[in-house]
Image 1: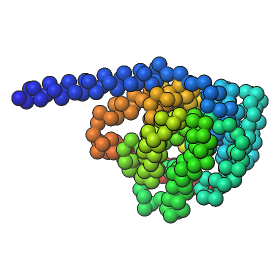
Image 2 (image 1 turned 90 degrees about the horizontal axis):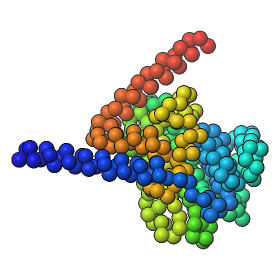
Image 3 (image 1 turned 180 degrees about the horizontal axis):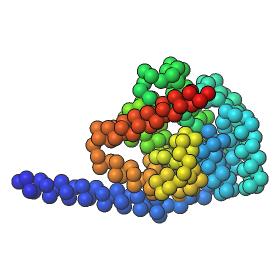
Image 4 (image 1 turned 180 degrees about the vertical axis):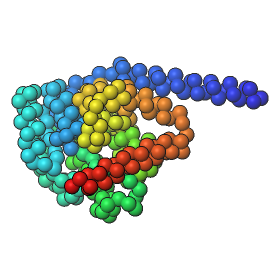
Length: 306
């Protein structure tokens, strides 16, 4: 009996791995970016001046999309817009908006009025300076409010602004950038991982609701990418540049309600899923405590030399 149960368990695991590998092949190897012009002439990107956001803006411009860049820093917005127009010969518009504020969406809606928007990338986000236990976070109340406003309310607000026009023409794409930190509760990134889990759940449920009305809604769940947010500078197979990550992500549009963007990140997610959640939490905690210790040591060293 025990031997039979063992064989059944091994068979189940083998089948699960085979199905996951087939899904990976279908999404990340066979995929290709759809004709974005069919959805609209304009793409809107929040958090568009750095990292993954800027890479989305540039990749979409490369495909002939006019770009609306939304971010907080007006100087950066002007510089990125000018660079994109010069490189890719497309139109750009800039909207200065601080997503930690709740009264920005009326102005954004006014600025977007009349544009044929085919794609929205909800990319703007905020994380910890370094992993930290909740009650030790500096300015905790302010940080919690900002995180919810930027990571959660921005997705809701921008969806409310852009989606009615998409529904009217029965076509559109919304990409909501979450994080691999949402795959399990992540100690020392408690608020961040919880906020990104909301993005994933919201996106998948909304995608199901509107899939028959021509709207593609997809969660993008990156692991580490060489951005300011990750503080990693050197790229590798498992840590791609924002440019290569986004180019791969665009090829997965419409193939899954949740995408990890590129094959290497999808493989990481697949292997993680084989472990129970408590083990994944333990590993994440060990890694984050290590990063925290290094950050505190670096801060103490900087304080001594200043």
